[in-house]
Image 1 (tube, rainbow, N blue to C red):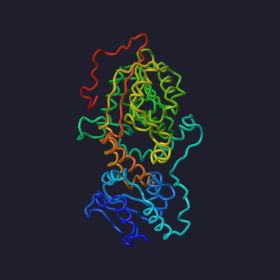
Image 2: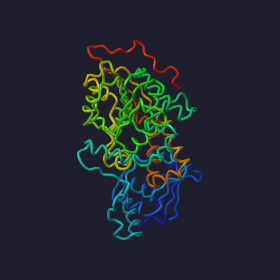
Image 3: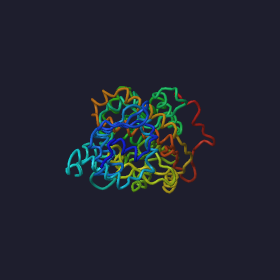
Image 4: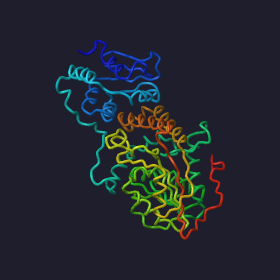
Length: 424
């Protein structure tokens, strides 16, 4: 028989009695410190049904997305609960206890697998084909431009900022990132820049305004392309900046003097890595530079993201993280000469915390724009990502390479990229 203290007792039996957060169950039972910064709320037996019918991360994700599991209070404190999870082993007796709770609430039907939430995506077609990549990008980015404006701030820049210190504004930190990329690429007036995965146009706008380049930005997100084009027109830069709804594999109007790829590489995939690098190499003039800014996995870590993970099903379908050493080797195999590698891991943690604060501060508007499930998904994924960067479980690097035909790189002997980049 299930212990009369109810679900909270089962959770305590699983995770121990020294939890950093409180747990409140639908049957009224509670555990954890009374002054906990966060509370994990099990709102209904359907949460347990999800866990029984899809054990592991996917079951937790589905229960959370539907609101059967919830987090009240400090999301970062709540995620500290995962430190108690690696050693958890559910015994046969504990499974029986959970099973009894579920069947008591819903009978035999409660043991039947439920259809996944509508926000869960399963893409069709060959992995990393143009059509499937476009569908993956649409799932993540074609949510609502206003939702992303609220989340990211006025810069609408969806990649790691560069922080002089945590006291500066997110907007200044994003401008500093764009300026750092421009300097690494050695941009000068009149140069041609290609920005692969241009998002809402932040990089091409900065490069054109502050470095006088002629820029082309490509994205396969229709909503991004539409708003980026409007931002270019509003900035009075339509004579120097072109936004295209185009796959990078379809760009044929090289040569370019420089190529930036910021926060797009995670969508390329290992199987397409050679195609990606060969295409960019072919679009560069001799001595042209490539700046590849991408999230990475630590050495020895398994390839991510797993296909049955929260991230793959709800956030970045088909996303893949590569180890930076593998990326450097791949670039050099495709005739690039790698000249500079920089880790920005702590910078991304700071950026993500600002995005979480923006989302929580504008919660009602975010829900109105994208729906409660989508807002909950983004809150969880960004908070968890911040903690992963802080703990070194996830990394991010800028890799600068050059097309050094015949050994000629045209790189300065001692480049100085980092002189005051707070503003151009």
